[in-house]
Image (cartoon, rainbow, N blue to C red):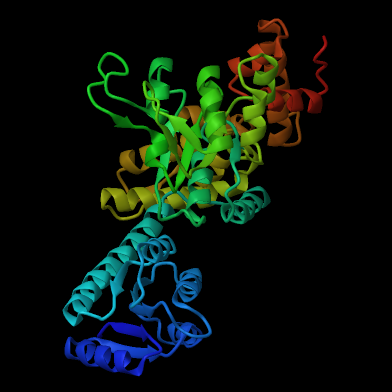
Length: 454
């Protein structure tokens, strides 16, 4: 099918001339005399490229360009003008125009620009498709109320530029929330840059975040752009931000306030347009009280707070997650998709998953690799999971409780009491020892009637 080119110009002779050369090259031209007519025609014809005059009655070219990009962000638009200035060309480019052609038109240049513009448009469409496919591997899977509410909140917040702070236990999927925010935002075509603040030594994290100038320190043999530079126009995800030093926190705070920074060893101020999404498994209010996290940075980041629930609080999502991971690993390994018996899934639902979704993903991957047949049965589940999940229903075991939930809660209460005793009833130390957020430990102690002041 021939590509459709929408020509928007109030001069009949321009439309006629362009019609002839475009048809000769095998394109299908359609026409509009002004901006308002162009908007109607674009919705009706869904063109592959638009040649758009700037000076027109009723609605000028820049206003038309802005309106076109609102309902068709990937549309390739080439501006035309007989009164072109550098300022106009820059403004149209900022609004999303692909190129700018001056009148009187060189028909040869028009054809080259149209060909190149269509090539770019095809690449944009392919990239958008690939980005969508790639994002499917990072979906927040689930239909429990907690996940459905989180998905709804993510889409609502994604359209804004607000800073976001994501909290939750290790392995719950905080990175997935960050990627979803970027994917559903107007910044989706710009970079998503991730940095794990806990994985970098203190002496390197500033250089990684802000870059450095040549000679800034031993080994700095050339200028290097930092993550904030690379994320310009897009989103930067600061994972484990609770592990960032106070010195680096001060610089991140400045970026949030002023949108500018200096590279390590440099004096030049660099301005960036970056959305900051941060995540942590720590209790930041507790870190503030302990003097290890800046209160002003917390409030800057915590504009929109999200909490990702642990997997044990959304067990009904486990069957969906199992199917999701089975499909991913089958595709990755180029194998036929394996099935899991319902009783195997029920066994997985009975386990508490201290490592959350990450642990479940790893177990499913192991089962896909190690199961020789096409069906995964309960006896193929690792003993550590099977015994923990099935202990309450072990044949011949005394069952004095009415449900697995009661048994689990009883065990959890005794476990917390034991760990509190071992750690001298220090809440922060106990929370760290059992890999639980301090606020969550307080909540569990309250629900189990454990007095924190004992």
